[in-house]
Image (cartoon, rainbow, N blue to C red; front, side):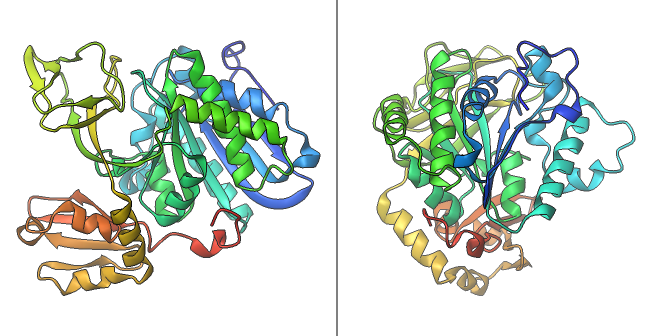
Length: 396
């Protein structure tokens, strides 16, 4: 089934949520592509229509599913109608979702996507991959965003493009963060700027290579693989490092925020660089580092991010510490206890945590969220990651 939202939106409904579903002749993994979680981002929709429509089912093992995100917003070419669909996937919101009596547009969309996810997870015990396709409002290299679990790191490394860790610490309720709490390989791919035709080509390349690396696509044309790998290598300017978010400028309600023109994602900026204006006052960078996803659209509360390169030594050290579950040592520190050991959640008293830098917690796999004036919750994706599910995958 294939429907083009750009050409036929009048009769689009929740029943059209799954706009591609290919079942291979042989059993295998399942890969789910979400496209249009933000309704002004069409590259993922166009790329899936292009790539998946030309696949031979005889050359497929497992299942490929293409899922529309915010259908109503896609119809109107808007990021969202009332609420950002990619900021609603919190534990509290999901608990309230089924009993919501007057759901907004986005809650109706979320309810339907949630139902799809629950049904899928109940239908298979084979490996499942979730990939959320996006574009940015600024010029940008293609890149991958992940929650920091080793299964995500390993799979992301297959593509040879920039990977950004830690954004979940600065965003409330992304879809991928919810999926990561369930332990599945889940990543976001940002293919370029909304209005750049190259973003569609980058997304096509990524979708095809994802099918190849998951083993779902059998015996693809070698020239096609090389072409797509070369395309992404060129688009990313040979940058394939791992970065970490260290800062986000959060736009307050009613704030008049305007990014200065000409900035791009992955652009190096020096400390003191004039980046934006807020209510007529200048905003300067507090870091000498790379700018990330500067906001050049009217909707959204993420003004810009700052990212830094992570040395390979620290990536390998964190891998070792997680493999031996060294995070258990953290509970011997005063003020740090298990909040939920099964789900990998620590609780830390701020009076203690302020003496430990974020980078220490990050080495052990923990990302933090402040829950009140005195305590942090520290989340570890490693303890819930379904490593056994992916152990026999060719990339593992």
